Length: 88
Image (cartoon, rainbow, N blue to C red; front, side):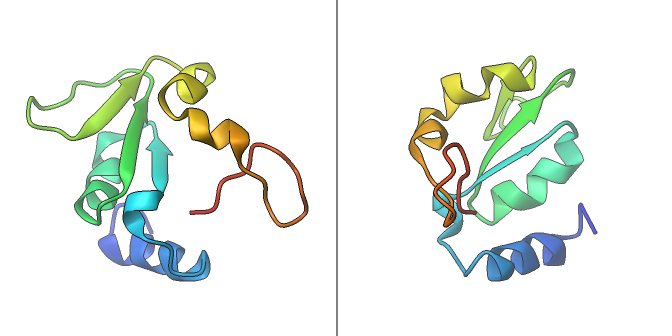
């Protein structure tokens, strides 16, 4: 379970062991983002939240702004061919 680091490692395994640096983790709680960032994932905090000055976490006001910060998600396809799904 989040925020235990084992949960993020398991999610990576279930996704086929992608490079964590190629993954984006989005959440509305900073304590859930910190373990993902420690593994090397790009992390995005959605909604209200105060980030520590040294945080390597992007903050967006709401999920509708996600593609502004991760535009490559709009150009991905899942195995079924649907647009907008990212691996990882």
